[in-house]
Amino acid sequence: MWPGIGCGLALWLGTPDLGAQPFYMPTRNRALFERGGAERFFVGTTGKPWTSGMFGCTRSSGGQFHEGLDIRCKERDSQGEPADEILSTADGVVVHATTNPALSNYGNYLIVRHRIDGLEVYSLYAHLSRVRDGISAGRSVRAGEVLGIMGRTANTREQITRDRAHLHFEIGLRVSDHYVAWQQKHYPGQRNDHGEFNGRNFLGLDFVEIIREQAARGKDFDLVRFLREQPELCRVVVRDTGFSWLRRYAALLERNPVAEREGVAGYELRLNYVGLPCRVIPRAPSELDSKSRIRLISVNEAEQREHPCRKLVTRSGSQWKLTRTGELLLDLLLQ
Image (cartoon, rainbow, N blue to C red; front, side):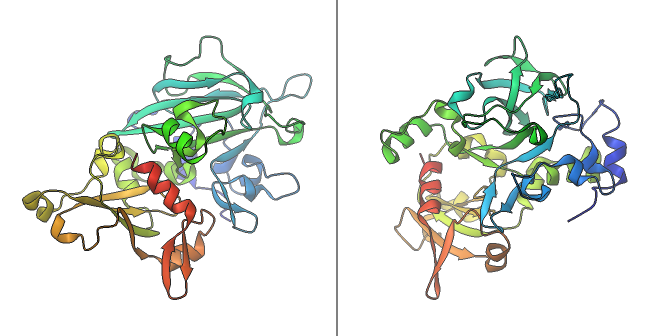
């Protein structure tokens, strides 16, 4: 693993004045950007190395997905409990606050909605000991504003141990406007204490990759370009033209002269390994050779071998097909 991100990031992270930079670190732990400091930044799962606290295919020998970053405690109070302030990663609005830790493995947590380069982006801050007074759904916050205090809350019988106290931090995009109805259809009777802000309704991004790109490009950083340059896992064609992703993430749509002439009958979605449609291309009727609502048209086998943990596609003989997980994700996207 890399020993540190680099000097450019260390300089950028030394000041709270972001200027044109949209993202801010969610705690004051900066060890990640020091040579050899990653172990002082990430917290691994019990008995596992610090790498299991990173985003992506970092658990169960690459077979299990971790949705965010587990950022290590840096400050403690007189009882040895975590005392780090949790900071909003960007300007935004709090859209969900859970202060009953029994309702989620995330314990006390917050979700904040941001508008970055024309995209609706969501950040999540979990395992808080407490949420700052006045921070609740509907409250506007600024980048770097204190949201709460790091903790180790969860709905498990035993709390996170003191030595593993951390912030679980996620950043991602929202899949659908109709999650509640979708869950009732596919998981009838399953409890949902978080409504449209259920974790299934979000697709995560690697925040470390984002801040590396932001530091490298400076004022030229653009989140849309960052997403479009994500490695492609597969391409899927969908025969649907009215799903909410098209409105919320219109900035990811690309031009297609054929569809502009003939009309749009569906879309080609180019998904990264997380399942996020990083590029969305309208397709005309003449470009769709199947009546299927959802059709897998290609798989990047090298990317699947490197990042298998989301289990969206599988090989059946010589053919690739969507797994049940992949089908459910796309069904939710099209709600």
